[in-house]
Structures are given as structure tokens and as C-alpha cells.
Image (cartoon, rainbow, N blue to C red; front, side):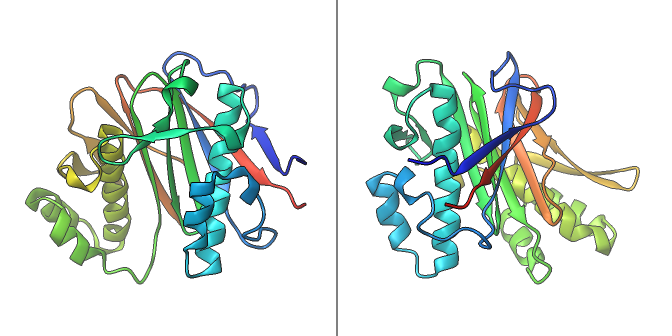
Amino acid sequence: MPNRFLVRPGPSSSLVLKENEVHIWSVQTLGESISSGDFKELLSSVEQDRASKFKFETDRRRYITAHAALRSILSIYVNGPARELQFVAGPYGKPKLAPNQAKNKFEFNLSHSHEVALIAVTQDREIGVDVEWVRKDFAFDEVAQRFFTTREVAALHALPLHLQREAFYKCWTSKEAFLKAKGTGLSGQLDEVEIVFIDHVVRVKGTVPNLSLLELTVDRGYVAAMVVDGAEPRLTYYAWESRSK
């Protein structure tokens, strides 16, 4: 099969995961040169079946591209064919590599929103990542009232109006990353973060012992966060790019 993806490492970096390191992969799912047929052969029959159930072609394309990228990226670390990778689900559905393919204890997490996907890969530690496209028409205050703690809502409302939307998304992605790192999904609690305003900049601090929260660098118009078990890791960024047939 022709290679239709490009691994583009950053300067002076390699694909060897070092101690206390996390690799962050950015995936563009833009439809200008991608159709739902591209990369489809990389997916398992289960993934192909799920892709076929999307009502809209845009959603189908985004799903196929993100999951094909995930398989392509993980295949580099485990040194095996992308399509043959097998996954198992945790108690709350969080996917992991099957035991027979996880001898090096690689852990990963995938998140995608609009036209960007993020994939985080590390070794022998739980990890969660979340990316969100900042929608200007999204009624974020209603969601905050429902899912944020009283303290968080108060902190959000105390910010200048022009910073509240950004603060909401930073808080939301951090909460999602915590839930994914813990493997509890939305069944878990949503009180793991604290909104702070320092030197005119909105920050979100983690409040869960032994879990490190980091804000990630993403494309303009997106907000992302990562949570990993243990000490704060060093981050290395990579890009996964599609090639036309």
C-alpha cells in the first residue's frame, strides 16, 4: 500500500520516547484533499462500520482521518502494521493497546474537534488529552452552570467578559483531560480544576494529587489540555500530514 501520510518531526527530535516525556501529535482533518475513502483501508472492520454510520460526509471524513492517523502513529512505536493493531476498552470505554501489543507499555489518548485531532503518546503512565474548537456562538455559560462547581462558576463570572469564553474552554478541556486520564469518562467528577487569573492571563490549575495538568499549544481558534499521571513531563510536538493518492 502506498504511504499516504507524512511524519514530520520537530527540529532535533526523534520518535524515541524518553523518560518523563510525552509526544503530542497534531492531525489536520481538513477536507480539501481528503475524502472518506482516503486511509479507510487502515481501519479495522469495526471502525469502518462505525464510520459508515455517520450521517454527514464531513463527520465521516474527520473520524476516518483521525483514527487512521492514530493507527499510523502507534504503528511506529510498536513497530507493527497499522491495520493489525488491536485495542481493548477499559471499564468506562477508554481504549488501550491490547496486551499482546503493549509490551513496551505505550499509553495514548485521542481527541478531535472540528478540523483538528490531537494524539498524546507516552510510556507506562495514564494520560488524557482534550481539544476543543472555540465556537463564538456557543452558549458556554449554560454548560458552566450545569457542570462547573459553584466556585468555578464564580471565578468565571469574576473575569472580564472578553476573557470568559476562553476561560470556559480552558477549564472544560482540563476537566475532560482529567476524566480521560483517570479513565472514568463523564461518569467521573468534574471538580478537578481551579480557574485563576494571573497577570491578565487566564490559567487553570489541577487540584488532583499525583496528576499533572498542562495546557497544550494548538492551532489558532482551538484550546487543548493534557493530564498525565506523575510528575510534569517534557513535551515534544509532531505533525501528521496526509498525502493525496
